[in-house]
Structure formats: C-alpha cells, structure tokens
Amino acid sequence: MFEAIDQIFVALKHWVVGQFPAAWQPLGSVFLSIIPILAVFPLLFAITTIVERKTLGRIQNRLGPNRVGPFGLLQPVADGLKSLTKEDIVPYAADQVVHFLAPIALIVPVLLAFSVLPVGRNMVPIDLDAGLLFFFAVGAGSELAVFMAGWSSRNKYSLLGAMRAIAQMVSYELPLILSSVTVVMLVGSLSTVKIVEAQGEAYGWLLKWHVFTPWGLAGFLLFMIAAAAESNRTPFDIPEGESEIIAGYLVEYSGFKFALFFLGEYLGLFAVSSLAITLFLGGWHAPFSFLEWIPSYLWFFGKLSAFIMLFIWLRGTLPRLRMDQLMNLAWKFMLPMCLINIVVAAMWHFTAHWQFAGAVLCRWLLCGVAIGVPYLWLGDALFGEKKLAKRTYRFAD
Image 1 (cartoon, rainbow, N blue to C red):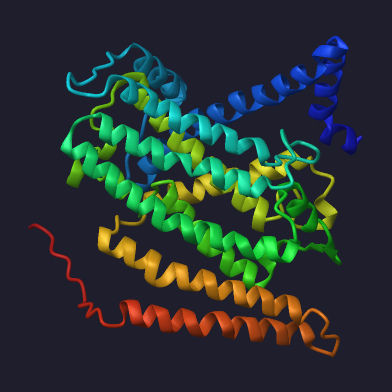
Image 2: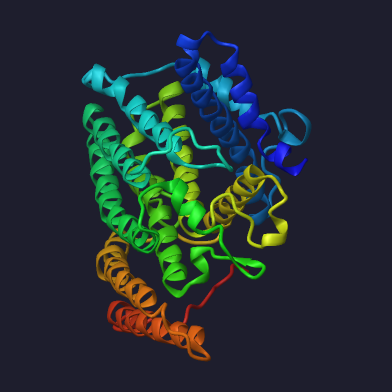
C-alpha cells in the first residue's frame, strides 16, 4: 500500500502515456514531465509570496496582507492580475528586442534546471549521467539575462546594478560549484539520481546523508551561503538595494516583465535549495530508516519548505552587507574553505579502511581539526583587524 502511494504519480504518468499511440508515446512522456514543473513550482512561488509577507509582518510586529480574500490568502492572485494588467513601459532609447528577451532568458534556464532534480523515488524528468554538470551549465545563463536587462535599458543605474549583480553572481558561483565537488568525489558520479541513491544506505536506523560527515557538514554550510548570494537573498540582496541603486537592473522594468524577473529569482531559490537537498540532505530519503514508509515526494517538498522558511527568517533578521564585505567573504574566505574541504573529503575517503576501536571518532577529530584550524585562521585574518566598538542605542524621549 505504501509503495502504491509513493509511486502514484509515476503510475499515473505511465497510464496516461499508454493511452497515446505508440509513435506519440515518447512525445507524450516529455510533455507529461514538463507540465508538473510548469505547474508545481510556480504554484509554490505564489504560496511563498504570501507566506513570506505574512511571516515578515509578524517578525516586524505588523499584520502583513490581510485584505484580499480570507486572511489575505488571495493576495498572490491580486498581485498576478495587477502584473498582467499593468502598463508595460519601455524606455524610448532602450534596445527593444534585448529588453523583451531578458526576462525570458532568465526564466528558461531556471526551469531547465528542475529537469535533472529528483523530487521523489523514480520521479526525475531526465536522468542524465552528468545531471549536476547540466544544472550548473544552464544556471550560468542567469548572468547573461541580468546583463541583457541592465545593458538594454540604456540607464546608468540599470547598468551599474547589472554589473554589481554579475560580479556577485560570478564570485559566489565558484564556491557553489566547489562545495559540491566533494559530493562528486565521494559518490563517483555526476548523476543526481545516483547521488541520492548513495545516501539511501543506513547506519542502523540513521541514513548516510552526506551532511552527517565533517566534509558534508562544512560543504553544506558553504553551499548554502553561496546559494543565498546566488539567489540575491538577504544578507546578499545587494543588486536590488533600493536605498543605494533604486532597483538595480530592474529599474526600467514594469508589469509582466518585472513579474517574470520576480518569478525567476524565486524559482532560482527553489532550484538551488533542491540541489542542496539532493547533494547533502538525502534527496527524497527520510532521515531515519523507520520513516521510509512516508511518500518520498513528501520528504522532498517538506525539506524544500523548511529551506524556504529559513531564507524568510534570514531576510527578516539579517542586515545587508556592503559590497566590499561581500567580495571579501567570497574570495578570501569562501573559496579557500571550499578548497580545504576538498582535501578533507579526500582524507575522509582514504581513512575509511580504519577498523580499530574508536576509528570513527578519530576520523571525525582529524577532519574536524583540518576544517576548524583554517576556519579560525581565515576568520581572524579577514575580521581580526576590525576594531568593533560596543554599539550604543539611543532612543528619543
């Protein structure tokens, strides 16, 4: 029974494809793989917008949206209708074609990235041997879309915002990729499906998630910091710092085009969070072997929901970094730590044959020291010279 519930969507797809003529079945299978991506994740985006605004309202001691529909739950519908009906204003001097294509160039690669992410057992649109490579390859197209938006607008603020966004995205793309190299080394495959399968083995009742290893924990933290920067999430939301460069590369966009950029940013957040789940948190696997009876897709989307709430919480908590702080963190701290973590992953692999009593503890201590000492040294080198005075708060009478 549990197996049938877990595979209900897979069985439904096979049944529907079977209704097509034999010659049309491959095309029907492709179509039925595309439809869920175009339906589920944009719907999740709509839900996230209302949840985020409500949560931030509570964090900031206000109500949030509460006028449209019961408890404001229809606010995403109102926002969507407003975006569809709002006038699309294009500057006279703008490059009309590039200005139109920029939001499309952002949306398409993000949607393609979902095609290699397994959201459940036997639930991956395309099982590529180089799925991880494909994910990063199509994800790199977002930099081009940002440049197209800034350059085509013929606006100095748009161009400056685009250049700053590209500098941030390129800088943090290196730690993002390098932090995932450790998983590829230990699993021996670029296939996202095989990476998830490798985390399905169990140590008694605990599954072998990569985050339960020293290199996996360090890689996961580095990956998530880089993912927040790649997604322009707080405290790395510099490209859209309204107090500094108004709206960055989005200055000259309005109406549905602006909504597409907004959608693309959140879809990118979902995609990179899904990849973190796939690489470090067991994908669709449960954390404990005795919970594997719960449908795999529920585990995956449960983890994704937890990530979304984490990013919302960070947005309501942390202040924005300065540009110099952002770049120093990427090049002077994140990049060296990712390279060190690759060495630590190799140490973990080559000490796997240790069989004496307390071998696991010794491996943890060895790898922990190999990560902790550079962490302290790099942190002191980066922030040790900063003389931070005690902050004094003054309140009006």
